[in-house]
Image (tube, protein in one colour):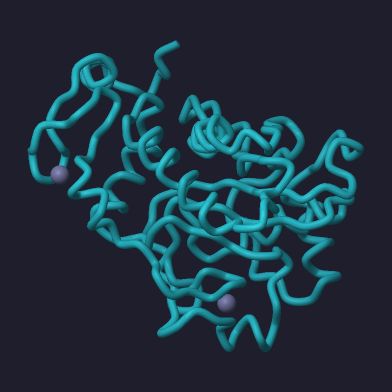
Length: 253
Ligand SMILES: [Zn+2]
Ligand SMILES: [Zn+2]
């Protein structure tokens, strides 16, 4: 299906990239394989986060727990991100959001899967992968959920985890308010997300997948919904993340 919002030229370009290896989007060097968009040189230079908070993935001078998480631990167990939300990952994210056939989706998701394997050292990967749901109205206008595409590619590599796409639904459009107490989180999440088939996630460890996390409010609300439904823990996985404690809301969701 060609999503209605996608123009024909973008579709043809995406199809061409699927079949013929082109040149790197950044440095124009030839690519080794089709279905890629960045060469290995540029992949090495992406804005990775080397030192980060073990809870919220905020960049830190050295690995540890950031002051904000020490003061008020988030409701999720931990957050892992592939990169900072800065160029060229920011451009890749815009492609991932608007083009269901973007080569960036597969390439960055598979790269992220390798990073996740390295970070979950003791074979303690979450048991279930759930993509961040989008509101049905957004689904109608956009035609696809980019988090679902990322979660799919992750699940092809992280085969111990089961991908469940219809457990959690989004009931409200827009960003939930910053959530303060546990009671407020649970109450607000009930009005933003709806978790069904609770028996499938009861007592299970979950990874909630998003393309980019900005304020973290949506991720916390979805986490609260999954915890309320009986999940043991929720980890957040995102391709890119802005600084939450110093956040800019300029990303078009
Ligand atoms: Zn390159
Ligand atoms: Zn933190």
